[in-house]
Image (cartoon, rainbow, N blue to C red):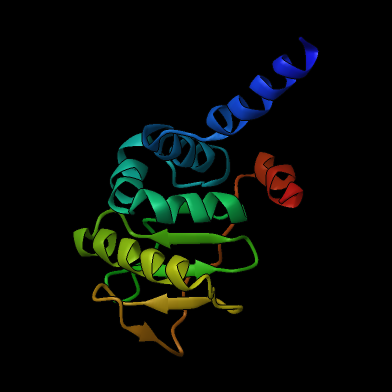
Length: 148
């Protein structure tokens, strides 16, 4: 009897651990709320929802986040901050939502993330020599980032 119960629990565990697509999106938005200084549901949701759920699963597995950042300008609307594992985009520039989603999809498929801060324009073209604001997580987020 115990063996049968243990087998049932073992078989059911992967199904319980697997999050639905909706849960993956909600978790990404929730995590952004803990870490991103520019987070609001209205700013974060469109960017997160533009990313394919499979790509979001890869980000979550690696402990990476998406953060809206209105400080980014139209010329440099998408940034990757490897130190924090954060993709940032300017939510006020509609093309940046598509660009960040495409860049995340591309990088998660190859699982080859840049090791230095990287900047892209609204068409997804890599830019070099650009100055962008430093990423500064919410003060209370330090322990969340360090735990990764």
